[in-house]
Image 1 (cartoon, helix red, strand yellow):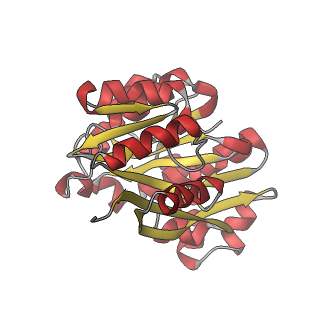
Image 2: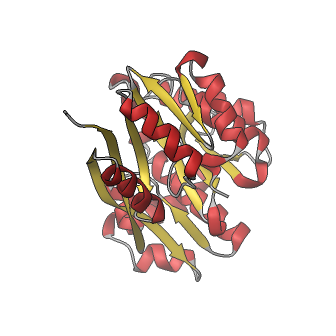
Image 3: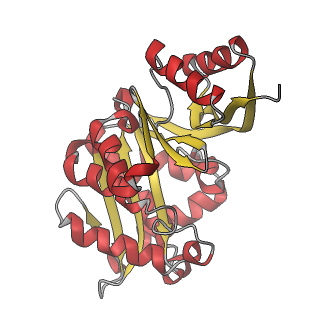
Length: 280
């Protein structure tokens, strides 16, 4: 199951965006930003004949279509073929190695012996001082309460200063919350607080294909960064995955994150692309 193709994910778009800005083409959903159709489905997509025909019509009509976080896969090959067969422009905006961690043996040993010095140091710090913090998991806590803490963390962080917090990013928070509430077996949230329940950091993960989790969002407040609470949330989540699944399969999703790169033992090529009609 590609969670970004699920009904819950797609239906959440109507909560997040103005309805007039959402364009549905078969199994694909797009956000229309000034005639740039931004696909809201990621990774590996099933693009059939109907989707191809309708996308061609949109591009011929002057729209550009953007796909984000597309794996090097049959999906990417199909999009290239559509472009070349119709004499469209196919522009690779970015391509990178997305870090992943596929681990089937002892997690603590991996973090203490196989990772870089920063990870080793912070993991030891996390283990030594764990009792000085509170770790709240969505498996056994009020999700709406935890989510209110997530939004406070996001608000009181560098992300708000750079307009990259979830509420500034076209209400990205409304994209994630329904899946967290309705797909309890395929989602999990960890929030780290101090002993007075001041929220410091969080980690949100969704489960996708082949028992693999995706690191959806990860953040810390200014106060949380001083206390290395982001690392505490991340390590606690990795331990949670290992305790539940007896292994760690996690795709860190994003790009060019030093911490994720230090944790990885696997990667996959991922791309942002745009397809549009060239000049006649």
